[in-house]
Length: 267
Image (cartoon, rainbow, N blue to C red; front, side):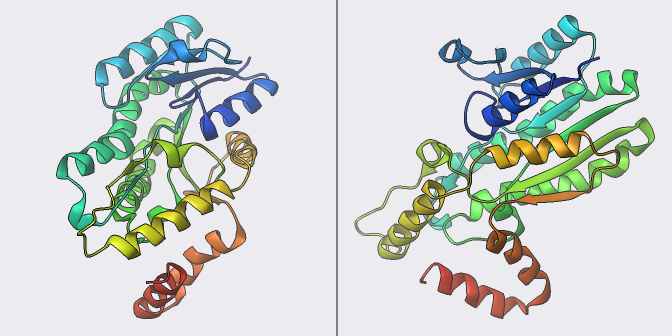
């Protein structure tokens, strides 16, 4: 019997790549978007869901269960980027980012757990970010929201073990997607004390995304995890140096690591 998969944010980028790969492997895939009518040519159904609107989460989960009778894999992929000097990012935008990257996945998890408990099985994969392992300059809010989801997963895993429900994180590095176009950018203010350093860092971040890895690497990683009997707590997918940066953070003194980051961003 084909496993039933829900991918939030499955209309483009990493989510789309994962969905298209899984249907080739005979999974029954449902993706989501805030505007599903834009994706009528999708290779798998795209349902209406906004992770900031809990009623849309509950409706979509209910629809899938009514259609399929089960829900085997949930991939919390929907997310939003945000950049800027923390001092200059409006509070409303910080809260908005956490609503999407942190509270949204929590509400999706809460919506699917009752069905997975009935089944006594299920796998939840939270797509986080390598940026969530470190505080990055001008990406501090994004790092914090993704880092929070990493830690939440560690706790959730232990709470769910008795129900045979599994959960893991997959942290991608920079991938060639449209995330840069969709992220919130704090404006480059002419009189800002951060004008030059933020502007230079913004250009560097966009270049990293433009030259990023193929999203199909994430699809392969997710497929492998789904077929793993006991998934690890954390997975990282990306360029060697991006993954190695996490290792360096563990072994280097804090100030040495901070200096490496500042040199990288030319600060």
